Length: 116
Image (tube, rainbow, N blue to C red; front, side, top):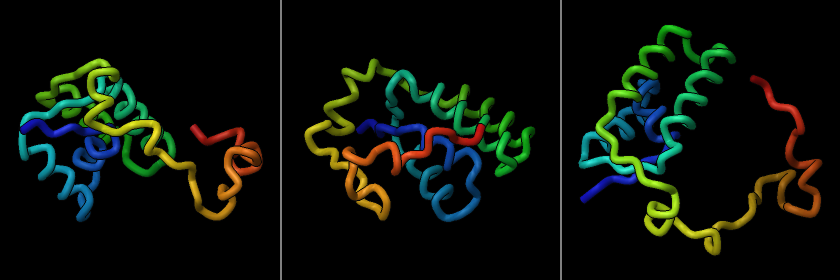
């Protein structure tokens, strides 16, 4: 059976040495990998922003990017992966403090400028 992965799982497997990273690495090794076609771009952006923010060393991010490009992935257009990953009718708005009134007060809940 194929394993559908997103960028957060792949990045965790590549740079997180803790329990989440070990879980993600085991997941990547558990079967053939399938991902939306933009996943490598998203993962590369996470690695770049993590390096710019100082969360990982630039050379670690660079090595992780090389590993990302060598992953045995089958990339599919989002429309083909969507039924496996989820559906917009099941996605609910954020309910954490400060966002519980979403989307009516979206501007106050989401900062307009983000680092990086």
